[in-house]
Image (cartoon, rainbow, N blue to C red; front, side, top):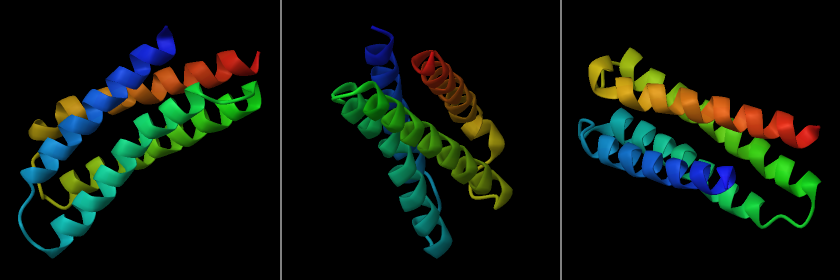
Amino acid sequence: MQNIDIQDRAKKFAVRVIRMVRALPKEGASFVIGKQVIRSATSIGANLVEGGGGATKKDFINFMNIARKSALETRYWLELIIAADLLKEGKLKELLCEIEEIIKILTRIILNSKK
């Protein structure tokens, strides 16, 4: 049940990131960073879905680790958007809070699965 909840949460997060990217300035750096943050944010949920269909516990843990790495990368891109003044931190605060929660959940899933 928890995996389905995190899958749904990751999908909703990815949709929010896609919508945020639409608000970025229409120029070169924003376009490149926007593509990167969309790629990493959508990768979280894709790996959760793929991991849920894993044949072994090892496969499951591997996909959860990949999803967590994508979440960490997404956090980096969001922080870069703020640092480069592409969007103000206030507009990204909810996304930053959500990605932190997703990282914590994925870390817990990985640790519990290894027990």
